[in-house]
Every structure is written in structure tokens, then in C-alpha cells.
Amino acid sequence: MNRRIVTAFYLILNILFSIVIVLMNKWLYIHTGFPNITLSMIHFLITFAGLIICEKFDVFCLKDVAIKEMLWIAMTFCGFVVLTNLSLAYNTVGTYQVAKMLTTPCVIILQMIFYKKHCSMLVKATLIPIILGVIINFYYDIQFNIVGTIYATMGVLVTSLYQVMLNTKQKEFQMDPMQLLYYQAPLSAILLLFVIPFLEPLEQTFTKTWSPVDLIMVVLSGVVAFFVNLTSYWIIGKTSPLTYNMVGHSKFCLLLLGGSLIFNETLAINQVIGITLTLVGIILYAHVKLNFADKRYPDCNNGRDREKTVTQSIILYESL
Image (cartoon, rainbow, N blue to C red):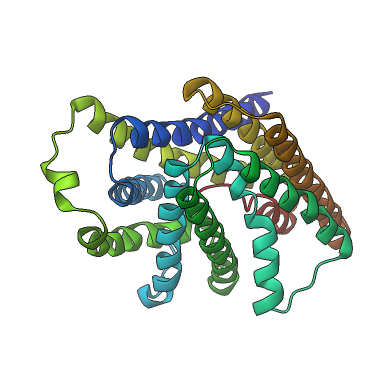
């Protein structure tokens, strides 16, 4: 009973933090105009501080790896976070969420091109409603704009590249996501520190008078972003892939509702159809991948190998 209560508690926290971070970032972009790249850098620094604390309490153990080995993955990590945040800033919450789901087919295409990996016709078939649903949603989005579409597209491409690289590095170095993030976060913050003066006017950040509420919201968003990672890490390790998958669908639907209620984002009936198609495609894709894992690991239905394989496959559209 205690284990069930703890598991339910972490699931609720993960759903709550995942929804709050998106809505909080959207609020910062709309009401304060806080610079995007600077906000991402602050998130990286707070995440690194949180990881140091977690390591001290033995939540995970450190594993040595050469910094040069982490440079490319840190660069794509920067691009992934910055571009998805820009997509959130310029698109509605609903369109931002739907666009992220294109990551799944994009990752599969990248793996087929660069790693010669092949997937079954059934898996390819599940990608059709995902792609079709995203296209329909963008086409009928009443707040459609070219800049938002460009950022969303670039975000999907870089996120997909990051996911492929992350999966490769995990296998190469035998490291879990928290161990990799321990190196990624500070290195990514340093990289952004060098590009901020060129991409964001310094006066926009340092000479503008920010209210105490603005600054508190910025710090809180960083703390919430860290707890999204922490609770996701715990859930991946302690629950089944199917549970995590269902949690992801819950976040998706609740974020659409939150965007509608908080930011007065209306959905046209054709957008609802597009979103439904996308969600159905993701559910079918997860179902097919889970069945594949059952056949691949028939004697370890609750084993760590199966959980890692399936979970990495079905949560590609989740933010870090």
C-alpha cells in the first residue's frame, strides 16, 4: 500500500510540474517579455544545482566522462530547449504541444537515414495519423504565424537529433539520463553564456527593471523544470512504460485545457480533429512498441532493459 501511495504521489507531481512549467514559461513570455535564451541558461544552472544536491543524497551516482565527448550533445541540448521555448512563445500552447509530437516520426526517419535502422510497416502506419493530425492543427490554427511555424519545425528537427544522440551516448557510455544531464546542464549554460550577447541585447536583460514577481517567477520556473526531470527519472525507473505513456497523454490533454482556460486560446473544430488524430497516432505507436518489447523480452516483463527500451521509444515527444 505504501509503495502504491508513493508511486501515485510521484505520478501526480510529475503531471503537475510538467503542466506548470509550460504554462509558467508561456506566462513569462506574454506578461514579462523575459528573454528566451537567458531563461534557458537560468534553467540549466538551477538544474545543475539540483543535480549536485541529488548526488549528495545518493539519488544517482556520478560517472566520469570526457567533457569533449559531451560537447555535441550539449550543443543540441541548447538548441532543443531554446527552439522549443521559442515555439511556445510564438505559438498557442495547443499548437506547441501538437508540434512536439512530430518528434516521433522525425526520430524514426533520422535513425533510418543515419543508422540504417528499419521499422515494421505497422509502426510506419501509426505515424500517418500523427503527421496528418499535426498538419491539420497547424493549417486551422486561428493564431497561425510563419515565425511560430519556423521555430516549431526547427525545434522538432533539433529535438529529434538530440534524442538520437542521447540514445547513442547512453549506450556508448552506459550512463542514465541523470548522469548525462549532470554534464549537459552546466556545459549548455556556458555555451549559452557566450551566445547571449550576440542573440539577445544585454539591456533587455540587465538594464530593464524587473519586478520582484518577475524574478520570483523566473527562479520558480527553473526549480519546476528541475523537478520535471527528477520526477520523470523516478517514474521511468519505478513504474511500467505503459504507466508513463498514459501520464504523457494526460499531460497533453490537460495542457490543451490549461492553454484554453488561462490564455483564452480557442480551438476550431478542425483543430480538435487534428489533435485527436495526433493523440490516437501516439497511442497506437506506443501500443505497437510495447507489443514489440514484450516479444523481444518475453522473460523480463518488468525488467530494467525492457523499461529503458520502451520508455525511450514512447516519450520522445516529452520535454526535458
